[in-house]
Length: 289
Ligand code: ATR
Image 1 (cartoon, rainbow, N blue to C red):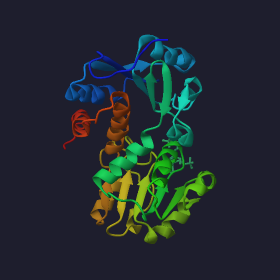
Image 2: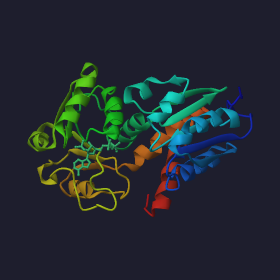
Image 3: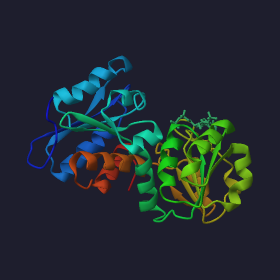
């Protein structure tokens, strides 16, 4: 079995991201800038892997001596079957976005949820304990962030979804980890008074459907924190209108930066240059700092 652990002085580090399609991924540009800033020699490359070749591609991580890869759509669930060890984050969420290769032993992690929470805490609210949180949506993205939010000991989490049954299923599965309930999106609008943080995990408002919002913003109250996982556009209509109502807003760019930062920290054992990573993405989105 190949030895593939990277440590300072051990030469170039090989990293990449596997997906299908992959050309649109901004991870290579972000991680390449990060490696340069950290003074670590190596490369982070896009790897186009079709579903029928996923097993061979995972074996190639060992064969070619990659220190690790990110995994993106559509492989996050399927890749789990090919790994040696699954971290608790991956088991809880049921998906892997980061693989670490330690001397041929492949461990799967999920850094999406913890990346999101690190972004929210760094950028808007340092302490989430006691917070009353509403998560809109009950798909894969909601699953990841809800798992990580429960670790922060909020007072309550309400999952509100267009299809109420999915929200209730998610809540039932994690009810042993905290005070979590599932409701329909229609019910949610009557419950906003008692909420501190609202998080949109749906694709409503994403490019090119930028006119849409997942809930009626006129019901929001001043001082509420409104967070949107979407980062294209950088400011969704939900965030723009919430800001106009006196809410504090948080966009999805930080989640992308910090999920990558955690991965890079697992691979290198060194702190990731998060500001450089953020600026690199802003530059390629054409935004400002
Ligand atoms: P992801 O992995 O990005 O979360 P997903 O698993 O397909 O994607 O989940 C998408 C989520 O967005 C779901 O909660 C979905 O609601 P349903 O379960 O009712 O399908 C929600 N969603 C998508 N489009 C929506 C819309 N137009 N209005 C409200 N919710 C929507």
